[in-house]
Image: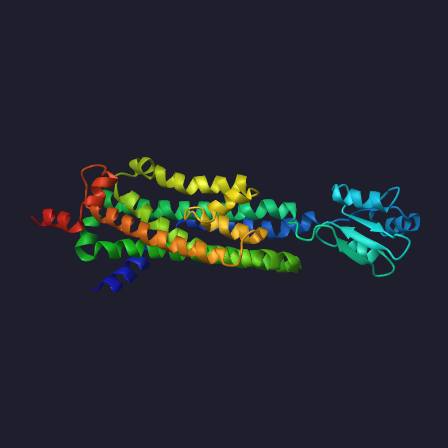
Length: 363
């Protein structure tokens, strides 16, 4: 059996096992529900009659008759100030002429339709991001990458430990090259993770379309498009390290301690992006660090803080880092996979070679 055939065989086996796993099914359902909620909740919260500040008595009466919540103020300047302060959703000002609707970042359709003549609309801050989206989008990207990479990564590590614990790995290595075994596991996990992410993205886009929110789709769509390649590279980079962590121990009970540094590598960027998403210098730095770039760079693209060339450069940095970490993970995996006399240290596994271990077994 050549290497490519061995990789396909291992990947197919892993896919058959993992696709029936309850953790995979439950996590997929959870993320789909989260995606639907993220698409629908902003539309629901934006529903209901808009609140309007207006100085003109006749305009105030017209708007009240249309079912809008009207706050009458002394003059047009006070109406504009109410909008800027967030006290009302919009203001209708006349200035002695035709009415004009003022709003911060999006024209309130119910206010525009309530006026007899089609008014001019002026956005006071057209580049502002809806505060609900400003919270949901960073949280969504971060939680999807964090839980998906952690869940599938732990599954890869557990699979390696189980094979060592049952000594089945000795039979596998005798039939399949060690790197083919590693590649098959990483490819299978990557395909399942990518399928899950693609499904989540499709459901999110469909939910946005169902709410007829074309503006939201045009805003978040490019970020989702960048998130997918960043996620794939980031997951593959981490998957090899998860497999190496699993190869360092012989019992599932020891896996948590050995994999703790890797869990922190996944966890710390998650909290950094959640709590520092509004800190532009920090987010710029995080978008070029391989472990945090999968969430930080798409977010900067969403907020309009990243130039067009930055995601390309960041992704290139990630590819280089992934290649280096995959090589390290593969070497540790080879050097520790056949060690069955307790936990292996990272350094000893990195220095050891598969050929040396096989030679010892054959002797």
